[in-house]
Length: 498
Ligand code: NAD
Image 1 (cartoon, protein in one colour):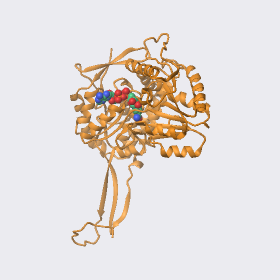
Image 2 (tube, protein in one colour):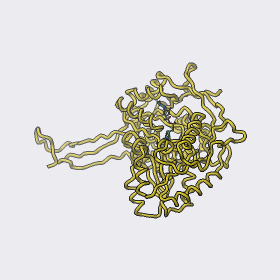
Image 3 (cartoon, protein in one colour):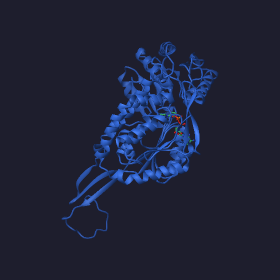
Image 4 (spheres, rainbow, N blue to C red):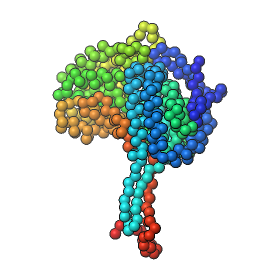
């Protein structure tokens, strides 16, 4: 059995007596590797290496770090096929989808290449007679990232390119389910010129995460994953005096107004609800239709389109989406669907009994569409993270917006309409971090920032874009009286601008 270890200080680090966990191919249900789970001592040794590398790395000029990132970008493009295969083999998503996610990650590297411009400070001449003031943003030190299974390339790339560009060292703790691509990403970073110790990968579980959260040498933690763990990471990291950004789960709504183009709405719902088997934090899982006529049209069009989708392994070029990530997750999704039926929602399209010839042990669930979902139901309240779309019927736009705003999760939401006034109202009044009009997945591009509101994000900073630079740097303000000014003698009251 292939054994996957860690990449610490530029070298593969492995220990024979390590605890291990299995890695699977979700399309076949076969175990493909044994993953080492780092002990506290292994993580502490990694932090020490990062600490040692910090002085040299942070002292380099921003343009030097940017040039390494330019080389990294080229290497990521050159290795796209290999990286996509690693993502798909362990996650199950289609190769096209994997490539799309890697491309979104490369866009963060492109953003980080602009670091000399992004780190420019502000300058004020003559804040007092002969006195100037300016500010600078300086790196924090050793930062850590803890990432989920569903985007093994893109989510790590949201974090470390920006952290490194700002002059920090970074330790990545990827998901135990999808470890191979993150390791390869970091190998390529070394090939591009990132020095040993500046970027490391430790694989592991709670023991590794808790060590990162508790060690005082780690100054900041970025987390992406489920809401309960995000909340734990935020509170534990903050209690240990770290800066923390912890992005959690989602239940994204799409409001469909009576004037919306139903063909466009259907395409949007099909792609965003079922793409990647619904295992995306920006998937639309609830369609709130305004008026019964709108709901009937959406239900008919979406259920017809859903029954025509191809579900298959990533090796099938015609597959629209693949399996769920693990047997446990598949069972959880199936149990949510059963609960939906028990609680009285109408299962219009039922993907529960999907069996693919030759892949009988794979974790496949076909598309499911529920109608008449109500806000008191479990399948409305909780994140399912599977290919399950619920239709909720509302009489008015005000009622639909109220649902969006009352939900405890606030990652993304969108509105489909031709009405400019309603659109503007929605963009302004929705209590959601990322909103869209007539787009299904309003994911911000690399040079804007990504993050939700409410229980979808704990902490103050969104990821990448300008917020990423703010998160990975601390602000310093300098006030300088240059030689040659007049000495006015001691001052005992606070200096003012008067
Ligand atoms: P998860 O919370 O189970 O795991 C995320 C990370 O936390 C992993 O690295 C895991 O090893 C670690 N972890 C798990 N349990 C832990 C514990 N008890 N203590 C310390 N660390 C622990 O999430 P997942 O199942 O890998 O990913 C799916 C979730 O991630 C979904 O809820 C999805 O919405 C969310 N997600 C959110 C975003 C976003 O941007 N908001 C993006 C992608 C995924």
